[in-house]
Image (cartoon, rainbow, N blue to C red; front, side):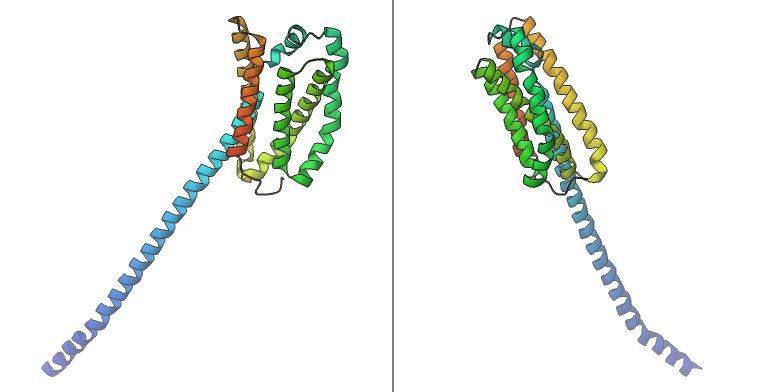
Length: 240
């Protein structure tokens, strides 16, 4: 019996090193897998942070462009400016200037979408912003019926490009963000209109000149163009 017990204890002692080495290898595998999972989670968190910052930047750019191009303190005083500063009559405005806005919209509204498909949405939005710049330059530095009619045509082209601008937004944000992006863009658009009108009224009530209002509007338009160039990326997908 004692011999058997000795043999049994020897067998147990002989088996212990194998068990110990097996446990060590399991521990090493567990530690390795934990390290890999930790690295993966860190990479995921970094990618998530980068994606969030990119989405926030794009959304901010879209909202700022819409806000600045619509924050126009001069808009409520356009008719008064053309009569008092440019020397046009109400009859000339009604019959020879304002109708060109309708004509321009009729000319550009349908082709602008086709041109966006052919030449790119970002390029057409950029052209629309340049038309806004041209509108401001014509208002400030030219006069006469012909140039003011041309001003209405460039403004019509700019407003027609708004449809491409909203389509472009759906090409630079993820589909789950469509509703949020649209809401913020619309809010920024109308906020610009409201604040621009209030600003213009405050300036006029405090003795500011109408020309100052048009320079302010030109400045806001240029800020919108700058935001578009530096904050918004090229499209990453086709519009829905």
